[in-house]
Image (cartoon, rainbow, N blue to C red; front, side, top):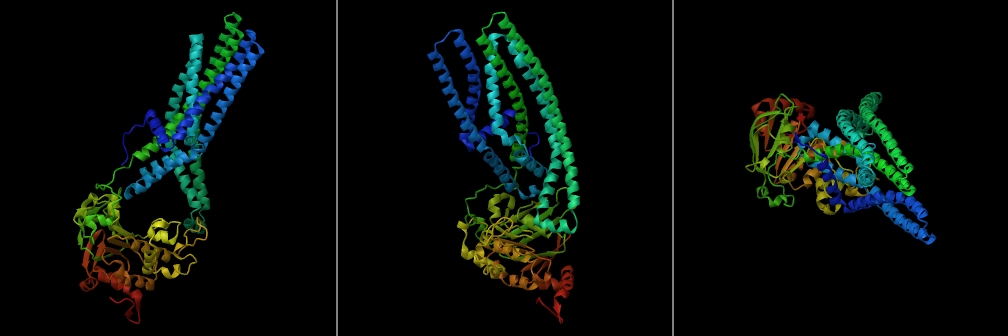
Length: 614
């Protein structure tokens, strides 16, 4: 769950950022050091060159000494400039790839949290904020290396030139450096305001991002066109954009006010510094070469202070981005599973998984967050090892919720679920998931080959014979066999070349093949044939005995005629199991199950005989 009072200080954020640089690519850190050193030395040597020339004229150097000194500086400047250019080029080329590392951290977090967290709005708000910090337009994170490099150069240069001015006069040093501290204090206040306004703008930015994604969503395209939604979508987009821009203007106006005050302070500083140096040379206390030198030092010191403030402002924004990313990555670490994670162990290494699973629900109840009504209540039942159970009931009875609890995707509000006598929370999460193979109502296919979708694995790890066997079991092989590349045909026309798309029924068959491929001892089928015609459905059920051999299985269906092959049937009403038994026993009982079966059977009757034998 999210941390409540976690504070992300600038120093801790900075340590995190540079530790990530060193861990991921130490060359970036070395280039930052080289670019910073060269960035400090180049202006310093350029400032010394005019002084050197004037001093030579004042002291009547020989031509050979002039040439020697100037050549020395020329070589020094050329080498330093080359090193800086090379370092800057490498740093620039690594900016976006380095951001992708943070993006991988974010994706890993989103993929690894418990399933129920995916319904938490705060989780998605923090995820969006972290991603927005990386890739929004003019993101400080995209220029992070440049910001830090310029800040280091400015800070070292300000200290260097300030120290030189201090040897000449304490007053001129104070006049040069004091405005920097005053502006820095103001910038801190502005950054706090910036943070507040950004949080307000994020809600609108998320809405705009959602609308933008829906415009290119193939599945949403039909509804958008048939129900004439483009005008409505564009209206929402304009409204949220106006709101977001309003917040942006507020924080940018705050920065503008701070920058205006900085300009006024800089003008006063420059005037006083130049006046002091002019007086010194007029009074004969300073040579012309020294005057030129100190004029350059004052100018460089002023430039360094201005850059320091500008980069300090950028670092303030960068710090906000660091904090948002760290907050998301540090939060949401809790899991309801308390067992040790050991992804190296296979399911067969787990002694609890040597045989078909026994499942027991003890006084299980579940209420969805922010709901006042229990979706499930007082569930008590045991599924014996290897038993085939059908779970039936009307829409909203709680069938899918029960399955999600059994899969460990949700966890009971009260009561406990035992698998082989062990509370599922005592398993390691990955170890528990390895024991389950499931087909849900709205599964997803990846833009990969059919074989990779079935095996859920890279091509090198696929068992081709098993892929074919599972496609035959699910009834999809007849279509796949006619394709030029057969099971290695790609899916997803929008991404892969020469790819195909599958119909709703074909997608459902592929999901079933994927469930069969996984060697799990608990098989769960949640409306696996909803998109199939009755003949295809019957073909699947005739093969079900082979599919479920040696497995405990749970089958959900609205079509009661398809449940006769199961050992027992659980009938759910309003979150409770009201009837249990075999198909025949429930029909003889004449209860709610029998009544519903009678109503549905009318749609399968032809000439007085049912198409399905009870």
